Amino acid sequence: MASYSLIIDGRNVATTETTDILNPATMELVGKAPVATKADLDAAVAAADRAFQSWSRESDDRRKQACLDMAKVLEDNMGELSRLLTMEQGKPLEGMGSGFELGACMAWAGAQASFELPVKVIEDSEAQRIELHRKPLGVVASITPWNWPLMIAIWHIVPAIRTGNTVVLKPSPYTPLSTLRMVEILNAVLPAGVLNVVSGTDELGQWMTEHDAIKKVVFTGSCGTGKKVMQSAAGNLKRLTLELGGNDAAIVLPDTDVGKMAEKIFGGAFINSGQTCAAIKRLYVHDSIYDEMCATLTKIAEATPVGNGLEQGILMGPIQNKMQYDKVVGLVEDAKANGARILTGGEPMEGPGYFYPLTLVADISDGTRLVDEEQFGPVLPIIRYSDVEEVLERANNSEFGLSGSVWSSDLDKAAELAKRLECGTSWVNVHAAIAPNVPMGGVKSSGMGVEFGEEGLAEYTDIHVISIDKT
Ligand code: NAD
Image (cartoon, rainbow, N blue to C red):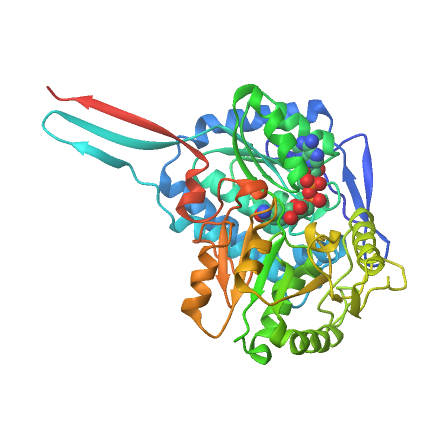
């Protein structure tokens, strides 16, 4: 079995304590993850701080090249990383699984090289010249969740490095191994100390958010933890990017071609077995096409193979961990107790592993936990509505505001409605369609700041104004 270690200052560092990481499909041991101490964290931050002194002065071209080099080593090691990701996270190798995630890692890493944050000349008159520069911040702490561990780590670390910062990354305690290995691989093309990784408990995350030598935290995870991060980052006014939970509504208008759109709606809801921040989590369907939509989605769900992601032909894996599994079971049981109708699924599958079937729940409405809370699993509530204005109000009546979608044969009408959704991204006739050059972020309790594109890159910088009096 491969061994895993922290990576600090370009070197592998072993820890006294380790924790067993089990495959959620088989409950077999995948590997032992190091548990970092506070001293390990201090060493990683000190290494990153030292590396910042030189990395922040490197030319833009050198840093662009580093992004391309990172994309290339990810490509070279795609087979190993995607297999490890499947064993640790549960997602299949095929479909929108590990191969897809590694592909996204390469695309996002490489794309950072094409973005520019040029000096902006605000005024250049006889009297004065005023320039706006963007400067790196220093050591950036990246804290990631367990659902898309590698892709989200790349979303954090590559723009940070591109803009001249250095990084200490902490993966989720549920999925540390693939991240530790990925950082080891990336270190082959980076100067020592630019990218460090420490794994351990949730407490390690808290130590990072409190650490005085860390200048920014980029955090992806739940709303509850995001709020804690914001509180404990106040000590030295750390810059923050918070990408938090969502409860995305999709509104299907009466003129929607169900046959044409159902596959896309299904994909938008069940991507990564629903363990995706920006998946459809509430599907509002107009009364006139409700039964047709329920029947079509049921057919698709029942034809989608669920199983061990290492096996050929599997398109959906297990839920990643027991905590999330128990939450999903609880939400479905609560829905049943409140009179909802199970169209398919709805009962835990035989073990081993945290398998739960793709589940569609009809005759359910707002006010039920499965509709109001983030299920983050393979369960979709389908809610009937008859009045468009009223359904828009219901969609917006949520503490979350990550994304949403409107579905219709009339694109203009759908776009008008999409503009009125209270969220960071509204899609029409598609859901969870993201791209490296399109900024994405949540409003309300779904977060602050954005990732991707030049707007996302700018979040890893402070503004520095240079003002020259020419008189
Ligand atoms: P989580 O909040 O439990 O954990 C996320 C990370 O925070 C982990 O690394 C964890 O160890 C760390 N952590 C825990 N307590 C901490 C503390 N007090 N201080 C600092 N760090 C701490 O989230 P999760 O269960 O791993 O992920 C699922 C959640 O993430 C869902 O709500 C999902 O919607 C959200 N998510 C959001 C996005 C997005 O881009 N908006 C993307 C993916 C996931």
